Image (cartoon, rainbow over all chains, first blue to last red; front, side, top):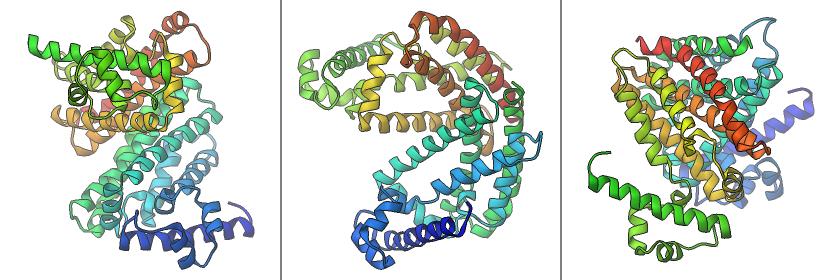
Length: 206
Length: 206
């Protein structure tokens, strides 16, 4: 993410999605129109469409940034550092700042309830997971994994990421305090990325 | 799968979906109605609905059997046998009989083209993958994996299965002869399940 212009773009994108998220949480996903989001955010409908061609992505808005974060963590890791270690660091960083992709989401219960109740959002969630996996295949290919190794490795990485996220999500949905979940997640991240390191070891050396 | 009655059910189910698949391949998924499928298969519309509450599952019809096969392979494996080895055997068996879930699908090109061109089928494919993963979490929990281990292990298993399937699918889509792909797949299965064995080793011992 380089340059002022680029950063301003991401800030505008974030502002629109924050406004939209608030409206969806208050009134439900299906009952809020793009026109209303545009008005509340003080931009044109066309601007909303430019940033979010799909209404679903106004709510599930972190996916594009997540791909950028994964790509950066992998491509900019230290010489000879295993991919799993770079991704462990990424996830520990997310956890430290309570980033939405850590799964430790402050108002997660309300957020995930809307997803669960909205078929279009559930479907989009699965699509985004599939898109992330496809991007990971590309990233691992660029790191020298062969075709089968890149496909399998991407699936392993997606499983690790999904497990960390879901562990936090399910505990928060079950009523555990966010602070308590946060305190327990470091151990989960360490265990999951230990297993990922084992899983990728043979693939990476190919 | 026990008993004559149960077997007859699966046979009826298979016959309906085979007829439907032929019609979808010939005329496209959206242009064939359930009423037409029922008439061609010589059953009532209600019978079709009883077996396939969703039209998409008439085409993507192997998912339910796949879950049964996974469950059987895991729960009936030898004493002390690692889960990965039971699943390696399952996949080698599928490959030997050119089972649809091996990915070596005789008329795969025409089949996957319909899926690619039909958003409802693409979405259902992702849902089925997610359902399989959820079932695998259950199966691994039943084998003594703890919560995090079962979630991660299920993701690893799903990644292995998906990689084997996709390796065959992409080669067949790219124009490779099915016989040639079949000949090369044993090595893919062995490599993928070697990696899965590494991936699950630490989780299973918990």
